[in-house]
Length: 415
Image (tube, rainbow, N blue to C red; front, side, top):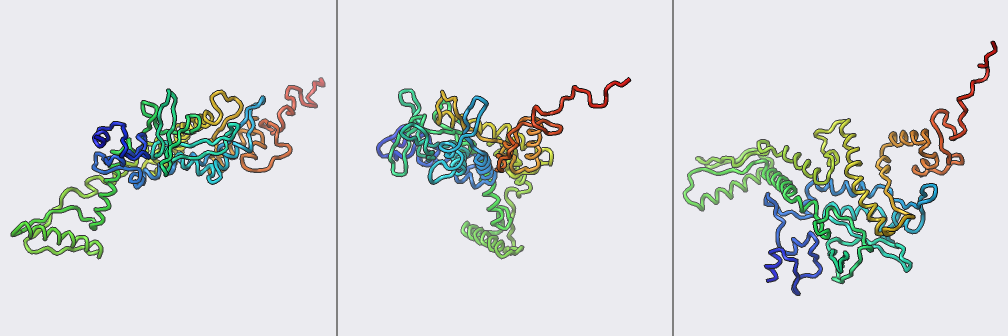
């Protein structure tokens, strides 16, 4: 009955089942012994999907980009805000625990989000309740449940020890929640047919060139028996592979025998066009412009720049907002109004020196940024006169510009 319950998808455990495998994890497919079979006949797993270059590019680009954004802690003040230092600010910006930097933590978290579909981290607090360390958890060992109406996270480590965390103790970033708001969807397994097609195309191309570019074929001739036919097929297949290894272009056939091609060659089957279409499909899964999957088929100087803006406005912003709100809720609680964590999207411009300097110049000349604020962003020391707002024109301190309403000297009416 246990096997039938698992086969029918019933979320039920018995004593012989492995308690370390949570029902909410994508690896439940492997545990049940069922294949994540796609329409193309390919079995899709996280590891096999990462063998597709477009999936690999997306699953590395997004986590790397988000992890590279500066993450700071700010305090609200009567005049606005100021950046905090030490304590939790150091944890978020530099090292989340003694053995992991903030960059490594974020790239791991978002790497799990864009593959498994969820990133989970435990918040370690001191005796006063202040966060001390952040410890990322293996999402495969996490089961999300409701207990007395409240969400809890049940975690089993490699030794099958079970720990139950309250929702306030866990930073949880899902790719997409299911309708029960507990389970999650993996972008790879949810779109297994697209990923399976990509795997099938890669496999077909490998087999095609393994045979020296010779497509499948049939043998015709005066065969006397089924055994003779089978031997001829085996001998010819071996001859094709040998010719491919030795870079020979000719095959010898017995008199009266011939070979006929089966199927179509890659050009007629539009294999190259299919590869490009798969890249576009995977770009849609991750809401990425194709140029960020190294596809410049339709890329130009102008539309590539627009795709860069599209990335920030419609993809990066969405994940930054989700990450910031989850951090602020779990680290400070819903009634906090004193401090907050924020990612600086301006960090995406660090690679473009010209655009960065032009933006700084406009900010200073229009009394938006102070020179010292710009210098701090560029890791430069403060200037003694750099804490004043300036205006465009002579670029003088705000309030000290000359009064233009008085007539210049020498323009008095002497008549």
